[in-house]
Length: 361
Ligand SMILES: Nc1ncnc2c1ncn2[C@@H]1O[C@H](COP(=O)(O)OP(=O)(O)O)[C@@H](O)[C@H]1O
Ligand SMILES: [Mg+2]
Image (cartoon, rainbow, N blue to C red; front, side, top):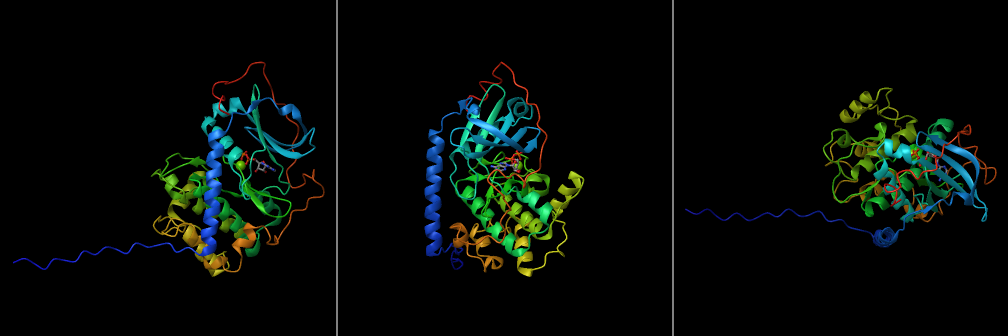
């Protein structure tokens, strides 16, 4: 006996429904992506020297790699931040690929919520990134100085971080180091994401273990291969940090911090609003099939989340929304929002170091 042929059930494929406004915005992102890849195709290596065109005002950042100075263009009198990195340090720490990738991306990106390079140079010992000077300092220093931001300010910053990540992902770029130190406050109170040192163009998955412990998504720690949704996890960590005032997974020992992340162990008591709690829960979500930003509607699930219902993404995108807080900047050379640093000697040699390795820089 032949049984009745079973009817084949094809699951209804979820379909993303875009509003007219979102369709327009996606077209804008498409244009930016096209422009970015055209710029990448025609990018020339940096010129040798060029540093002589700038005079140093003061140092605003210091690291093992070198330092960040506030500089003035001698002819145009324009102010810039100049990040100086030692070639020797880059080679010793095996950061060459990261530096080359950051230089390419930041020389070609043109997006309001991400920093860009005005110029890049190299000489015998160092490489130089010249960027617009962002006078309000970074959000890490702001949080340390002023305490938790409160929901309105956090929401305003979150929308801009959302835009920066959405843009990068649209261009097939994963950032991998979205954190308070890498968000700079402009004079008008708006922010820019910086430091694309760990950013990478990816089509699918990647495996490199990199980032900052407190912000690492569990799939990076578990070395399973990961994708763009690690940046949305980082947004969840940032939302928590900005409103509660400390990292959800903070620990003096990195191993304990990583353990807490993998087990998703953090205290939820200090998050006041239930809607924010809900959004954080869905971003700091170990299960990738449940993490917002990684579902069928992509990042639109974040944009459409109830916590954002009282802020206009469009107004923030057009920068017509009044920032809830503006940095105090007394004049254009004011560096009060940065730590102060002693002048350090940066040795130089008569030989061109690592000429072939940096030929594409
Ligand atoms: N364009 C800029 N304007 C003002 N400050 C900047 C600028 N770029 C970097 N800084 C400051 O220098 C710090 C380090 O820069 P960053 O590019 O993040 O380098 P890294 O984290 O690799 O040391 C930032 O956290 C910020 O405080
Ligand atoms: Mg940084």
